[in-house]
Structure formats: C-alpha cells, structure tokens
Image 1 (tube, helix red, strand yellow):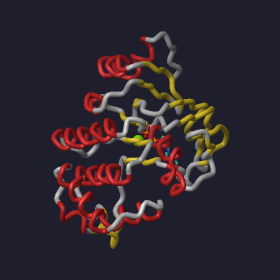
Image 2: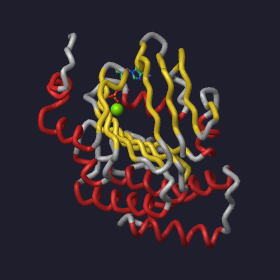
Image 3: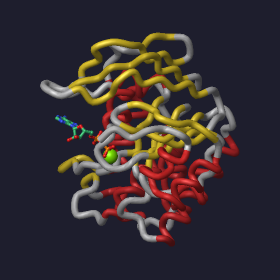
Length: 252
Ligand code: ADP
Ligand code: MG
C-alpha cells in the first residue's frame, strides 16, 4: 500500500501534538518511527486510523492516491489499514472468533464457516495460542502477551495491506515476541506489497522485524531519518545524544 502523510498538524481539544509531520511509505516498505515517551507516536497511529479524539488542523493523509482525512475508522479498515494497538481493549460478550468473522463479512469478504474455522485454528496454533481463547469474550481476562497475540491473529486473518505496530513488544515476553515476529515476517514474505510502520521506543523489536527506513521523532515531528544504522545509533547513545550527534541543537 502507498501511504503519504503531508504536512500534517494534529491537535486534541486543547493541545497541538503533531506539527508538520511528513512521511512517505511505498508498497512493501518497512519503516520504523522511534522516539521517547510523549512525542506523539501513538497519536500518529491513531490519527492514521481515524480516531475521533484527534483533529486534523492542516495537511493530508493519502492512501493509494486517495485522500482519507475524512474517512471513518471502518472505511479505513476496509481499505486494508490495520493498527495493532499498544493497549488492546476488551469486548465483553463478543468472542474473538465472532469479531474476526464479522470484520471479514462487513468488509465484503465472506467465508464459509468451516473454511473460516480451519484457517482461524491453524493461525491460532501457529501463534502458540490456546484455541479456547477464540471462543471467549475478546481479550477479557487475557494477559498482555495474549492480547498482542490476539492482535496478530487478526492481522493474519484480515490480511491488511498496511500494518501499524504500536509498541508491539510491550507486554510480550521474549519467546512470544519471537513467535509473533516470525509469523509477521512470514506474512510479509507471502504478501510482499504490504507496508509496515513499526512504532517503538525500544530497538529490540527492530532486531526481529527489520526496517529499511528509520525515523526519529521529536516534539510531534520527524527530526531525523536514516537506515537501520540510525536505530543502532539510538540504541547506543539514546535519543538526546543521537539528535545532538547529527549536528542539531537542542532547545529545551
Ligand atoms: P507517545 O506514544 O509517543 O508516547 P502519545 O501520542 O501517546 O505519545 O502522546 C503525545 C502527547 O499528547 C502526550 O503529552 C499525551 O499526554 C498527549 N495526548 C495524547 N492523546 C491525547 C488525548 N486524547 N487528549 C489529550 N492529550 C493527549
Ligand atoms: Mg505510545
């Protein structure tokens, strides 16, 4: 999928969060956005998906040559955008199996029940996830790691063309992170035009899912872009020093 974010300014009721944010992601590219807490990373992920809490003051989000600023969340989802939440929510009374089936049906991708269950169970097993979870209320009583596996299960079933991963490694132990990353990498190999935006403040996840482009975020905008070496520089020196190392002045 082709994603273009042009001169984006985003605010909540009383606070400006993204300021002149620009980013272009071509089909099949994996980009990482790194930055310390509070710079606006999760805001970016939510505004891309169309969360009503965030207001676009200026700028454009263009997906496959179509301006999507005014599309609702479900419309963006049906275009093939998917956000893996930093903190996935619970839905009491709706099971994981029902939720994913409804998403497919509403997106006009109806599947026979038997075929659907087979595919769902296969992916669940490969994620080393207990099949009983499929028939329990979505995320209710789930551990942090199980919630994240539930997110990736949706990716595998809904087959998005643009995946945003917001702090995927939070709540995942190393073994689970490895399984989840392997499944995601396999998905990307099988669907090579899928674009990915990895949002993280730790470099750990980037050793599992390798970005070709790395951007550092500061005060609501990208302050530096580079390749994987930039991530290694941040790992070694931290955000503040990396920013200064590149010849920028910090104004606190
Ligand atoms: P990050 O994910 O980089 O840690 P966030 O995007 O979550 O940062 O938040 C950026 C800043 O915007 C923070 O100061 C946060 O408190 C504020 N913020 C985020 N969402 C809202 C909201 N819905 N209402 C008010 N302030 C918000
Ligand atoms: Mg965040």
